Image (cartoon, rainbow, N blue to C red; front, side, top):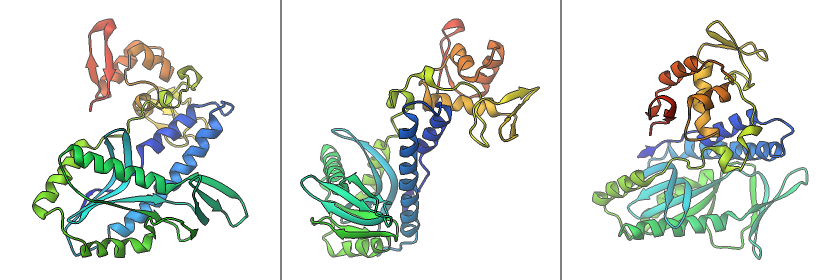
Length: 315
């Protein structure tokens, strides 16, 4: 049973918004643009594997969760987590194409593309082992004895694994079903009566993405960002307001609620506390009364009164 469906990354959307507000000559711009491309590829790989998983009809009860973020010794995020009667299964998804070779001493994944380009990545085996350890630690902390299994899943048919040099389970996406089906050959550890309890425990402790606002996460000065109302059509920052409508001079997109939508971006990018003055500076609005009305419409948590008024996102 699918408990937590595939969902596109809020982090990716926020990264794009940040890129649109960074001047193209900013020193962090190319690095962020590259990170966005990598995150997009990862998201697409997870979506491809999810399409396989949602078609499964396994011969036992299970719960499937996409993007589980837990904290034990440190915060960690699992691409897909399956809770089964035989234990917990971590699926670490990779969407890397070309000839792939796992190396040890030092551990790394070497990618050779069709054009001969060679790239090096951190070894996903180490990542999977770390997540398996942390998940086991999480269960132990909650007085549960549950085996943890894991597999690295390559999402693309254009991924060709040459050598692995380890005993980690490595699968292509079309092999996931048989891997999971074969779990029934193992001993039952979690009876159905407790499987639901384990699922509820995971959902209770699952955390949202915790690296907002992104300017703090990436150590970018807020003053470096471009202020103004962003166009939802093309991403350009600096829409013009004519009467009650915002217009984009770049793509001619018109939006009555553009300022309200841009306001929500503040918490992803700038800070977790907002004031009337900060909002005016962020959206380049002159009237504190206009901003007051805007903040009232934004369904935010209001703290304090008069000049001390602050706003936060509701949980």
